[in-house]
Length: 115
Image (tube, rainbow, N blue to C red; front, side):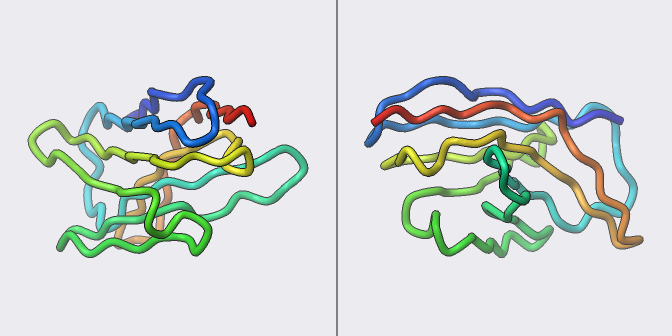
């Protein structure tokens, strides 16, 4: 099973990007899918999560600007990022967590926001 993240790139401040995370294969017991990010020299931090029942949660720094969504049929999770700021620059990782507390990570996609 692999999580393939895509959609990163270079964008000017105020712009938008949409990240995608496609899961190949089926992970048994997934109950949370999410996005995290890690900037150089910093710890990985929560960006957004979505539960099986559709409930979403966001990190304080992205609330009101980012939206997490999913396409169950495509087994894909998205992160729509609007009003991007230079401080959003980071490697973005998608994840899937199971009811057994096992976490699967994607390979990361780089988002660079220029001022």
